Length: 249
Image (cartoon, rainbow, N blue to C red; front, side, top):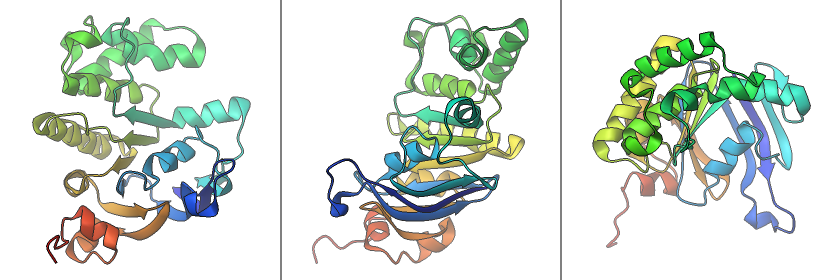
């Protein structure tokens, strides 16, 4: 379980009203698929970067499986980050490396080398995402949806417990988006990995998530099951995201 406790993130010189995150508290159960949703500037990406400690919170705690990871450094920090994989909007693939080498990159980053066993595992992951035949191709030879599937295979290389998806489908067409969301859902079902989806699209949340947290100006303004929030949104932010605002009123 991930427990985010009273998390605040401010930058040097920023006024309190400009906090990227302001007293955010969320609990995410193991095996869940949770959507973190909000308009641009709501604090979604800052939150996900705090979860994997690419950003250090100004105050509050991130507790994972009972351990406060907020202050981890060095070897312990590297070990924690191997448990938390990240999938980006821009795919983040290495252009000069083959698809197989991209999926093997976490192995090289962890130990400085890639073994025959690592390559076999990478091929298994490419097969899982339907791209084993593209192992020798380069990212430029793939479509956007295919590149994101390679990124998912790479994220799975170190058997993470948590996958953070930061607007992972926003650069894709609707058909590719559906393919990626179905793949993530199937991975969650077969492996039990916890998935946190950062998005501004209620459509994405409706298709894949069980629970949703709505952020607005760095604060949690609503959270609950997707069914509950969609049926009866109580915050202005959720109503805007669900397009239930009468713009002519």
